[in-house]
Length: 349
Ligand SMILES: [Zn+2]
Image 1 (cartoon, helix red, strand yellow):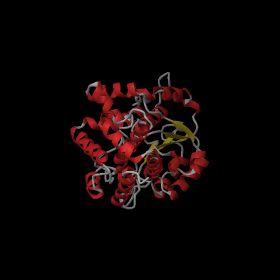
Image 2 (cartoon, rainbow, N blue to C red):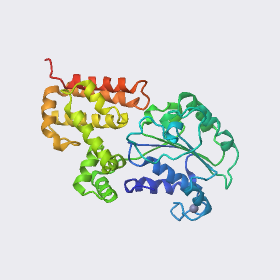
Image 3 (cartoon, helix red, strand yellow):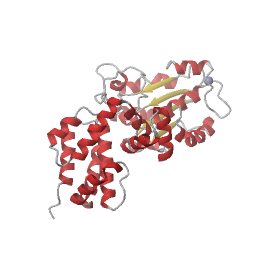
Image 4 (cartoon, helix red, strand yellow):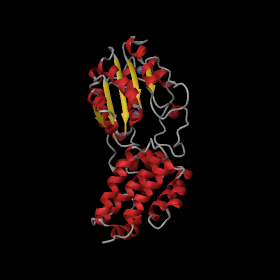
C-alpha cells in the first residue's frame, strides 16, 4: 500500500514506470512507509496488466502470486535474523512489514551476507519466468555487510536486461559511496503533522489530540507512532519517557535496567527528540515533541546550556549511526546514558 503522504512521490514514480533506472535507492526517516512503498513498486512492475496510471491491477496472475509472496521473478533480501524473527530488538518492532524472503543458511545473521548475493546470480542472468522483468528488493540495504555490498556492486554495474534493484534504507550515508553512485536516489518525506495525525487517528481510532501526542513523540513518523496504540507498547513508551526525563538524577544502572528490553533504535529516537526539545527550550522556542514537559525541559535546559546540548546532540547522532550493530548493547546504552548525564549535569562554569 501507499500511505497518503507518499502519494506525490508515488504518482511521479509511476509516470516514469517504463523508463525507470535499473537501481533505485529509496531513503527517508524510519517509520514513514518506505518498505510498503518499495513493495508496491515491485508489485506494479511485475503486474501483467497495469492500470492506466501504471499501478498494479490486483487481478492478474502476477498480482495473485505477489499477494501470496510467491512471485518467481521477485527476490527479497533481508538479514536472516529479521526473516526468522530472531532479531535481538524484537521487543519493540519498527515497521512490521518485513516478510520472509530467501532463507540464509546457518546461524541467523543481522547482516545481509555475500551468499545471499551470490544466490542471485542466476536469477539476474537468466530472463524472468513470466517476462523480462526481475526484481530484487534489498531492505534494509544498510544491513549489507562489506563483502555482500561488494558483490552487489558488480551486479549493479552490469545488470541483466529487465533486472531491477530496489534498495531501501533509513541511513543512506552508511552505504558505500560506490553503491550509492550506481543508484538513482529517491527521498521519501515525513508527512506534514496534520496529515500524519489525521491518518493515525483514523487508523487507530484514537482522538486527534492523542494521535498528535503519539506522533510528536515518534518524531512525526506515523508507523512508529502507531505502536503506541497498543496498550503494552504505550506502557513501554511511558516508561521510556519517564526514564529519559528522569536524567540526570536517575542512576545510570537504574536507567539502563529500565531501557534494556527496548530496541536501541526506539530509545535512541526518544533521547534524540528529548535533546532537540532541550535545545529548542534553551534557545527560547517551544518544545516540539514533549510540550507537556515544558517545565522539566526548562529546568534541564538552563542547567546544561546550549554548548553542552549541541555537543550531546552530535554524540547521539554518531552513536545512532551504529545503533543496529552494537558489539555490546548494554555497554553502548550505558555509554550513551553517561553522555546524557554528563551534558545535563550543572555547568561547572
Ligand atoms: Zn496485475
